[in-house]
Image (cartoon, rainbow, N blue to C red; front, top):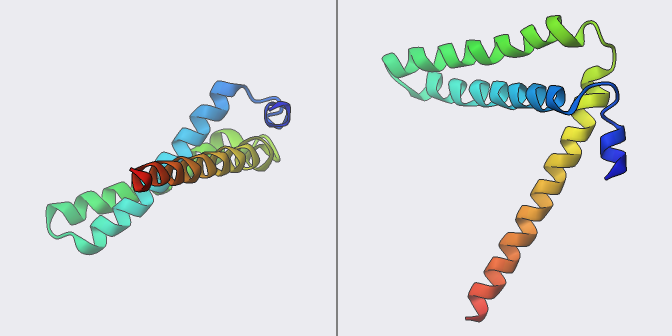
Length: 107
C-alpha cells in the first residue's frame, strides 16, 4: 500500500485520477470509434469517425498541457500505478468469479 502511494510522486491523487480517467476514456473512444466507423453505415459511421478523432485529440492535449513539461510523469506517476491498480482489479475479479462459480456449482 505504501509503495503505490509513494510511486505517485509529486502529482496529487485527484490529478492522477483525472489523467487516468481521460486516458481510459480516450482508449475507449479510439476502440469503439474505430469499430463503429468500420462496421457502421451512414450517420453511425460519421459518429464513429468523430469518436475516433476525439479519442486521438485527448492524449495530444494531455501531452502538450502536462506531460511535455514534466519528464517521466506519464511513466512514473500514471503507467506504473495504473498497471498495479488494473492488475489488482483483474486478480480480484477472477478470484471473485471463481468463488461465485464454485458456490453455484456446489448448490
